[in-house]
Image (cartoon, rainbow, N blue to C red):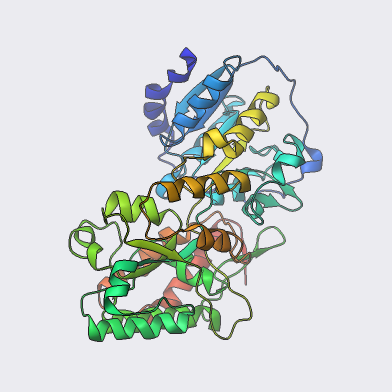
Length: 442
């Protein structure tokens, strides 16, 4: 490993604290225009700076090992996890000083594209101008959609977090229940579980990402962006209220928890009684295996649920990181090669912790998951089906749905209110946040 890899890791944390205290919400910016993208003077042999979260550090180190000629300075940062705005805050500082931008940056959220691709000189370079189309065409259908602004692509997707229906096959078989295929069957089963097996659960509503699981799958227009910064926010739409009504019904029945799956009390007392839960693909290893420590051979995944009235099945997405290449980079060749390698190669993605966005890597990844012997049956059919069914009408925005839900709805739930009773306040919170960021809300 290049000795530069270790540099700046310790120093960066302290420097970040000095600049992260202000708001990272930018003023409204002009639209992105990839046709105006002009490379700065290039130095193909020069050093590139890469910012990555701790989870991605090993894969960058693996690239360095496979490409010893590349000069890389690796900086570890938050990855903008849990609603952090570290990358945006620092980029704004670099925009003012005229230097310091990382050549490559990883972010845990596709929402960063909503600011990274805008401005007189946007931070993100249009990757379809620097990475060959033959590479980009290998990603799962729709995987790069959150990276698109207009006709161009401004980031490369690392992994997907498509929502499937997780269930405990051992418990389901023991209780004599069938895996539901529609949301109506899911609600009916949830009410039945509450009566026949009190204490057992079919889902949770206290997770910040609840909207991405239930409302996204229901095609709820909670934030549909069109033509730059025009956004539709309509939580009273029938496709929102049907999901909310179902959740309220199951909470009242007792088979939907108001906690988060990562609450200490839930892990201790409820994890073993989670009969099923719609959730992202990373729930398998991250939640059921590493956190809940459910034994091998019990957990399985089914394809996303469908509303009976709908002609198509859609699902949501909870996460999935992205890689940006800086428009300011003096070594776009190495930056593009690194981003291509860490997102598409079998070495980088075959044994990653989450489902790869690149199709051939995802095939290998699923095979390796099956080889672990952890799951009760092959998860590949559910995962590959769900990867193609993420509803495209839920737009990446500069504001976080998770933080708004956590601050507006979760406290009301904990006070005994229904989600339905919060719809007005919830919608107002979304609209107000969107407006402060320059969105035109309808």
